[in-house]
Length: 233
Length: 130
Image (cartoon, rainbow over all chains, first blue to last red):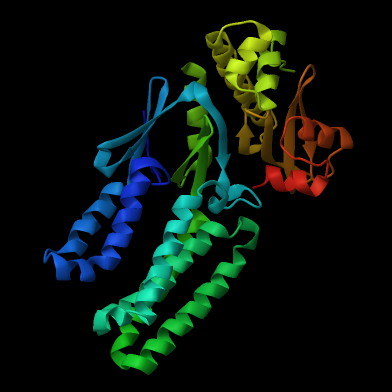
């Protein structure tokens, strides 16, 4: 049975490795190009897409998490499930608590780009320098969305407001009016990220001490379907 | 009210308190496979009990932990949304509580099950809600 409108997040194992490598790879593409001149960004964007959740399926007595267009699979025995939670509906639920490696991936990349911005000066490339600022703010927003508990989510909107103002004022001051359009894109992206985190259900599945994360817009239904499958397994 | 069969409950309780399957098997003089089977059955029964309870009272399930035997749900009481916390008490079955005013024996139970370290209400709510 296919669980529609539900997908796993690359929070552990090979999907997480591919996800972290690709994010980092995209940001170092410019430097790698100097050593081996191939379009590194394109390669790593493909790996990033490949690392993403494709769907969730219940097969007999297993919950199968699919990644990379269904090529990568994580199989969880239904009768070994210890916990099922709607993380997004727990008063103090934060993804960070259960998925530290995944959450800190966003922060580590943001910190690396901060280093690139201030120390390496974006390899002397103005567009890269602008992208550094753009990605630092976007990834920090991702990190905070994953770290701040549900009962304090209001803070996120203040952060969106502050970072959007910065994103309009700083590039305008530094690079002129041509930087205003991408700032508008940032604003839309920031709203999309925070709304996405607030409206989606995040389902935590714990099996034998290992946790997995699913995202769905029908969390309660998915929980019931998994429970029914457990009963029939 | 659902209660786990005595033997299954003993195995589940030992596991909930942090013992490994091999240790449980040695302590009870049974095979590791038997321990594994008992744990699987206990988990399924606990999920069934918590989900069943939520269905009867039309609560929305937020969290079910079969390893430590508790559930967090959202219910309605006098047209107000209230939090519901339910626990499986060995030898007694499932008991549910509305709101954060949990009695002292629940705190002691939570310490015994390893949900919290100290019998503090705030600590227990934090553990259940995060």
